[in-house]
Length: 59
Image (cartoon, rainbow, N blue to C red; front, side):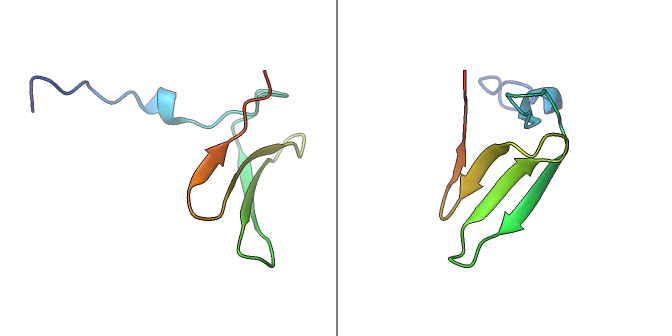
């Protein structure tokens, strides 16, 4: 392991809903190729992607 690299924290990589704190996401494919990532608990839009993922932070 490289001495300059940090250990990976899997908990830091979990996508959370900023509205309800949910951790289960649903991915929808739109007709124009965009993917919407929505919270399975409350249905809030959490992220979307066309070429690169964009995380929505509503705080």
